[in-house]
Length: 270
Ligand SMILES: *[C@@H]1O[C@H](CO)[C@@H](O)[C@H](O)[C@H]1NC(C)=O
Ligand SMILES: *[C@@H]1O[C@H](CO)[C@@H](O)[C@H](O)[C@H]1NC(C)=O
Ligand SMILES: *[C@@H]1O[C@H](CO)[C@@H](O)[C@H](O)[C@H]1NC(C)=O
Ligand SMILES: *[C@@H]1O[C@H](CO)[C@@H](O)[C@H](O)[C@H]1NC(C)=O
Image (cartoon, rainbow, N blue to C red; front, side, top):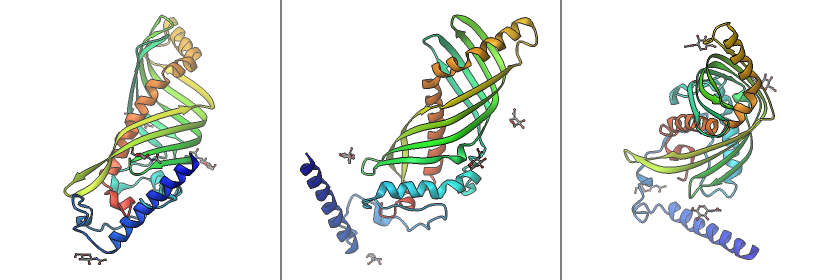
């Protein structure tokens, strides 16, 4: 087992050595089918710390890239149309859960998220030949507020509620699994994220909602109290829907970034 693994590692290493040697000899034509040598040389923006495909420590490299870009993400990167992630404003998240004790459709709007800029990366797993990236992140504290509109059934109790919400999450751990694909646009290769799965766990959580729809009448107060008392269970039940909704948001966000960053910019020997 171990021997086979070492052998295959050596073979991969050898293969790279040959490839690199070929590149050093500048044999553009030999590498037919690939347009890589026809791509222009792009300048490296200050917020990018590029990695190399053949770096044996590529995971450590991407780890540093993600740490390096962090202060830029916090402030936003206007040339990439990246808004600041501190606070992160998400115009809308929709989620729907059609089964179990919580069957609701929820729309959250104008969501302000305080704390995502303090992310720390705990682990990076990369398979660069298949563009597979797994990132493990921790967020010490996330505070969120915004508007919500929710309707459906909670424990067979019909609910319809609209208002403001506030939530505080401590010790958030998230795993993002990304699958990328290469895409060529005007002869330049980019990586596009074809799949992003997010899973998260919350250490501590506090919530508060303030219903506006039902007014200050008895039903409104009962609804508000009911939702506030059950909000933890509701969130837990909504977790898969929330993960999917958050993943969709970040997939679009990241693709907005990657479609403006040629592969060669963040991976020099791409
Ligand atoms: C590689 O070849 C191209 C075209 O023949 C040439 O323009 C370029 O300067 C060469 N680069 C190196 C590093 O030799
Ligand atoms: C969104 O939230 C911000 C800050 O909480 C507030 O100033 C703004 O008016 C809100 N916008 C809408 C469209 O509700
Ligand atoms: C981020 O972390 C720093 C240092 O722990 C802290 O001072 C700051 O308040 C945090 N920011 C947010 C938005 O949580
Ligand atoms: C990387 O992905 C390729 C293609 O899917 C696969 O053949 C290879 O075994 C993977 N490498 C590792 C180290 O998992």
